[in-house]
Length: 134
Image 1 (cartoon, rainbow, N blue to C red):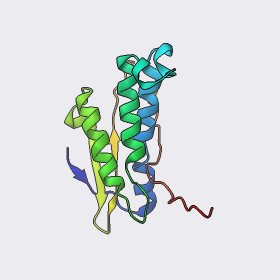
Image 2 (cartoon, helix red, strand yellow):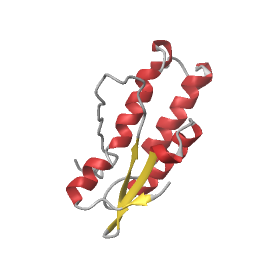
Image 3 (cartoon, one colour):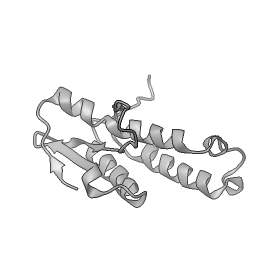
């Protein structure tokens, strides 16, 4: 995996959003019975437990602009994607020198159709710091 250089803050914000789209794609690919866990953690099937662990890791990763790092979250996502079978060529981590903690990830999930048009899914991984007063 290589870290590329994406010019412009707007381009960076759009590109680092792609990881969430990938997670949504993975959810869509799960069987319907695996999408809605019920009961306590001990009652979950193995696939539900793995999803819960992934979701917990992402939620607990601080990606706020003031104290967090989207670059760290992107690296965590890349690790999970590689474990799921994505190749180095399918994963691109990026950041810009002026904002090293505002990096992101682009993952390419190749389709199987020669006739259908590709789609692009975007999402963001940064969050606004929650203030108790709000």
